[in-house]
Image 1 (cartoon, rainbow, N blue to C red):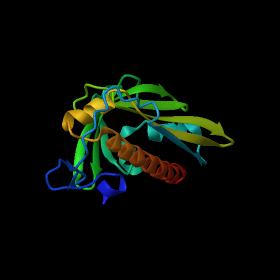
Image 2: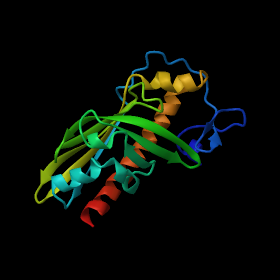
Image 3: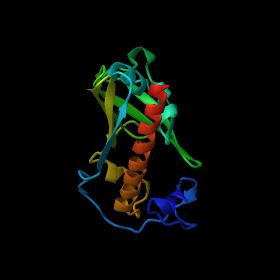
Image 4: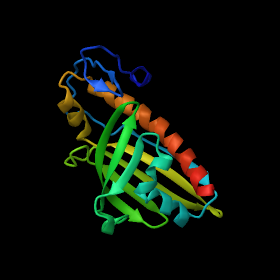
Length: 193
Protein backbone atom coordinates (compact mmCIF):
# COMPACT_ATOMS: atom_id res chain seq x y z
CA UNK A 1 0.00 0.00 0.00
CA UNK A 2 1.55 3.32 -1.09
CA UNK A 3 0.34 5.24 1.95
CA UNK A 4 2.18 2.86 4.27
CA UNK A 5 5.24 2.59 2.04
CA UNK A 6 5.73 6.35 2.01
CA UNK A 7 4.88 6.98 5.67
CA UNK A 8 1.18 7.83 5.60
CA UNK A 9 -1.42 6.19 7.83
CA UNK A 10 -4.88 5.49 6.42
CA UNK A 11 -8.18 6.33 8.12
CA UNK A 12 -11.74 6.50 6.75
CA UNK A 13 -12.23 10.21 7.54
CA UNK A 14 -9.03 11.57 5.95
CA UNK A 15 -8.55 12.98 2.43
CA UNK A 16 -7.84 10.65 -0.49
CA UNK A 17 -4.34 9.95 -1.81
CA UNK A 18 -3.35 7.19 -4.21
CA UNK A 19 -6.80 5.66 -4.06
CA UNK A 20 -6.64 5.40 -0.26
CA UNK A 21 -7.61 7.75 2.51
CA UNK A 22 -4.69 9.31 4.31
CA UNK A 23 -4.64 10.80 7.79
CA UNK A 24 -1.89 13.22 8.71
CA UNK A 25 -1.12 14.49 12.20
CA UNK A 26 -1.54 18.26 12.52
CA UNK A 27 1.81 19.98 12.55
CA UNK A 28 2.46 23.66 11.86
CA UNK A 29 5.47 23.92 9.57
CA UNK A 30 5.30 27.56 8.49
CA UNK A 31 8.57 28.70 6.97
CA UNK A 32 9.73 25.10 6.61
CA UNK A 33 13.24 24.77 5.18
CA UNK A 34 12.96 22.49 2.16
CA UNK A 35 16.56 22.88 0.95
CA UNK A 36 17.36 19.34 2.11
CA UNK A 37 14.61 17.88 -0.04
CA UNK A 38 16.60 17.13 -3.15
CA UNK A 39 17.94 14.03 -4.78
CA UNK A 40 19.90 13.09 -7.86
CA UNK A 41 21.15 9.87 -9.35
CA UNK A 42 23.17 9.04 -12.45
CA UNK A 43 23.49 6.31 -15.04
CA UNK A 44 25.82 5.70 -17.98
CA UNK A 45 24.09 5.17 -21.32
CA UNK A 46 25.82 3.90 -24.45
CA UNK A 47 24.24 6.60 -26.62
CA UNK A 48 25.62 10.06 -27.56
CA UNK A 49 24.41 13.06 -25.49
CA UNK A 50 22.42 14.67 -28.33
CA UNK A 51 20.43 11.45 -28.83
CA UNK A 52 19.72 11.09 -25.09
CA UNK A 53 18.73 14.77 -24.96
CA UNK A 54 16.23 14.18 -27.77
CA UNK A 55 14.47 11.63 -25.56
CA UNK A 56 14.40 13.55 -22.24
CA UNK A 57 13.41 16.83 -23.86
CA UNK A 58 10.50 15.26 -25.76
CA UNK A 59 7.85 15.36 -23.05
CA UNK A 60 5.49 13.29 -25.18
CA UNK A 61 7.82 10.32 -24.42
CA UNK A 62 7.65 10.67 -20.62
CA UNK A 63 5.26 7.73 -20.33
CA UNK A 64 8.05 5.45 -21.59
CA UNK A 65 10.29 6.60 -18.75
CA UNK A 66 8.47 7.72 -15.60
CA UNK A 67 6.60 5.45 -13.18
CA UNK A 68 4.35 8.40 -12.15
CA UNK A 69 4.00 10.79 -15.11
CA UNK A 70 2.01 8.73 -17.57
CA UNK A 71 1.91 11.26 -20.42
CA UNK A 72 2.56 14.89 -21.25
CA UNK A 73 1.85 17.33 -24.06
CA UNK A 74 3.17 20.75 -25.00
CA UNK A 75 0.66 23.52 -24.32
CA UNK A 76 1.89 25.29 -27.48
CA UNK A 77 3.42 22.74 -29.88
CA UNK A 78 5.20 25.58 -31.70
CA UNK A 79 7.32 26.16 -28.57
CA UNK A 80 8.06 22.46 -27.94
CA UNK A 81 11.37 21.88 -26.21
CA UNK A 82 12.30 25.55 -25.90
CA UNK A 83 13.24 27.36 -22.71
CA UNK A 84 10.09 29.07 -21.45
CA UNK A 85 7.75 26.51 -23.05
CA UNK A 86 4.91 25.06 -20.96
CA UNK A 87 3.60 21.51 -20.92
CA UNK A 88 0.94 19.60 -19.02
CA UNK A 89 1.80 16.27 -17.42
CA UNK A 90 -0.77 13.61 -16.54
CA UNK A 91 0.26 11.69 -13.42
CA UNK A 92 -1.00 8.60 -11.63
CA UNK A 93 -0.22 6.73 -8.44
CA UNK A 94 -2.56 3.78 -8.18
CA UNK A 95 -6.07 5.13 -8.81
CA UNK A 96 -5.16 8.70 -7.83
CA UNK A 97 -4.56 10.91 -10.89
CA UNK A 98 -3.70 14.58 -11.32
CA UNK A 99 -2.30 17.04 -13.85
CA UNK A 100 0.65 19.39 -13.41
CA UNK A 101 1.62 22.43 -15.44
CA UNK A 102 5.35 22.68 -16.02
CA UNK A 103 7.66 25.31 -17.46
CA UNK A 104 10.99 24.53 -19.14
CA UNK A 105 13.73 26.57 -17.42
CA UNK A 106 16.78 25.14 -19.22
CA UNK A 107 17.01 23.59 -22.68
CA UNK A 108 20.58 23.19 -23.90
CA UNK A 109 20.98 20.56 -26.62
CA UNK A 110 23.06 17.61 -25.47
CA UNK A 111 23.74 19.17 -22.04
CA UNK A 112 20.73 20.01 -19.91
CA UNK A 113 16.94 19.88 -19.82
CA UNK A 114 15.23 21.22 -16.69
CA UNK A 115 11.66 22.19 -15.81
CA UNK A 116 9.64 23.44 -12.86
CA UNK A 117 6.35 21.86 -11.82
CA UNK A 118 3.91 24.72 -11.15
CA UNK A 119 1.20 22.45 -9.75
CA UNK A 120 -2.29 21.66 -10.93
CA UNK A 121 -3.23 25.32 -11.45
CA UNK A 122 0.11 26.38 -12.94
CA UNK A 123 0.43 29.24 -10.48
CA UNK A 124 3.19 28.34 -8.01
CA UNK A 125 6.70 26.87 -8.34
CA UNK A 126 6.63 23.58 -6.42
CA UNK A 127 9.34 21.20 -7.63
CA UNK A 128 12.22 21.38 -10.08
CA UNK A 129 13.20 18.34 -12.15
CA UNK A 130 16.15 18.14 -14.49
CA UNK A 131 18.56 16.11 -16.55
CA UNK A 132 22.21 16.95 -17.08
CA UNK A 133 24.19 15.10 -19.72
CA UNK A 134 27.95 14.67 -19.87
CA UNK A 135 29.94 12.87 -22.59
CA UNK A 136 31.34 9.58 -21.28
CA UNK A 137 33.45 7.90 -23.96
CA UNK A 138 31.06 7.21 -26.84
CA UNK A 139 28.09 7.49 -24.50
CA UNK A 140 26.54 9.77 -21.92
CA UNK A 141 26.49 10.10 -18.16
CA UNK A 142 22.92 11.19 -17.36
CA UNK A 143 22.04 12.72 -14.00
CA UNK A 144 18.40 13.21 -13.09
CA UNK A 145 17.68 15.62 -10.24
CA UNK A 146 14.71 16.61 -8.09
CA UNK A 147 14.39 19.61 -5.75
CA UNK A 148 11.44 20.74 -3.64
CA UNK A 149 10.95 24.51 -3.87
CA UNK A 150 9.95 26.82 -0.98
CA UNK A 151 6.24 27.09 -1.92
CA UNK A 152 5.64 23.33 -1.70
CA UNK A 153 4.81 23.14 2.05
CA UNK A 154 2.13 25.82 1.72
CA UNK A 155 0.59 23.98 -1.24
CA UNK A 156 0.46 20.75 0.79
CA UNK A 157 -1.07 22.59 3.74
CA UNK A 158 -3.65 24.35 1.54
CA UNK A 159 -5.26 21.00 0.70
CA UNK A 160 -5.66 20.09 4.39
CA UNK A 161 -4.67 22.40 7.24
CA UNK A 162 -4.29 19.34 9.51
CA UNK A 163 -1.79 17.57 7.27
CA UNK A 164 1.63 16.59 8.60
CA UNK A 165 3.54 18.53 5.95
CA UNK A 166 6.92 17.02 6.80
CA UNK A 167 5.56 13.48 6.58
CA UNK A 168 3.91 14.23 3.24
CA UNK A 169 7.11 15.73 1.80
CA UNK A 170 9.17 12.86 3.24
CA UNK A 171 6.86 10.46 1.42
CA UNK A 172 7.16 12.42 -1.82
CA UNK A 173 10.95 12.45 -1.41
CA UNK A 174 10.98 8.66 -1.16
CA UNK A 175 8.69 8.44 -4.18
CA UNK A 176 11.09 10.72 -6.11
CA UNK A 177 14.16 8.66 -5.11
CA UNK A 178 12.47 5.44 -6.22
CA UNK A 179 11.11 7.10 -9.36
CA UNK A 180 14.46 8.54 -10.43
CA UNK A 181 16.11 5.13 -10.22
CA UNK A 182 13.31 3.59 -12.30
CA UNK A 183 13.23 6.47 -14.79
CA UNK A 184 16.97 6.28 -15.41
CA UNK A 185 16.80 2.51 -15.94
CA UNK A 186 13.96 3.02 -18.42
CA UNK A 187 15.88 5.82 -20.16
CA UNK A 188 18.88 3.52 -20.59
CA UNK A 189 16.67 0.77 -22.03
CA UNK A 190 14.92 3.17 -24.46
CA UNK A 191 18.10 5.01 -25.52
CA UNK A 192 20.15 1.86 -26.11
CA UNK A 193 17.39 0.00 -27.98
